Image 1 (cartoon, rainbow, N blue to C red):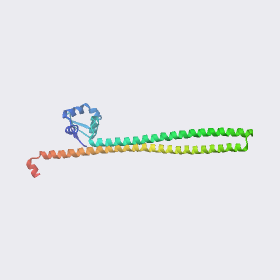
Image 2 (cartoon, helix red, strand yellow):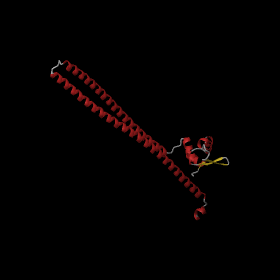
Image 3 (cartoon, rainbow, N blue to C red):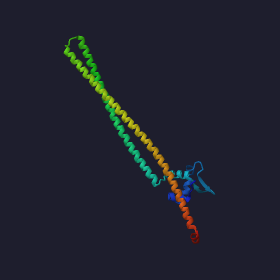
Image 4 (spheres, helix red, strand yellow):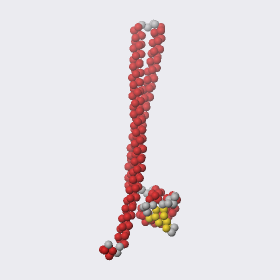
Length: 222
């Protein structure tokens, strides 16, 4: 278990002992609500473990350079994903508008076809039109039907395009979720690495202090 003394906290936050000691006392319930991670000797603060240190860092808004760099990179990736989603949404809106217009044209063509059919039926029933006129009407009817077929094909193409944009949008959301997960994993790795660095630093400082405390003859004869 990593131990963080008052001296460690003074160096970490660059504050006076009295200030950080008072802060811990004032926010003890927030830092260690279960009373399992801060340790006292004779009623005075002695040390805290990694769990309490993490809570204290969060409470004081402490972030080192590695953490800040990771947050900046994560924010940039989020912004890029947002831009991609916005572009896809704009493209999807355009496809929806094209589909709406195609349906409108199809409806108009069907109305024209219905009117043409009625006219043909009336004229045929009256038997007042020459065969040539009837053939002309049938020709127009066939042309209208061809137009409807073309419009239906356009609608189908727009539907396919719309499905493509929807799939892209869903994929973009999935990439955003993966990015968030990777961000969380990266933050966890950074925290672990910071604790490891802190432990190595304390070990080095302890060795250095022990070496300084030796007398001249102890240093010579080991």
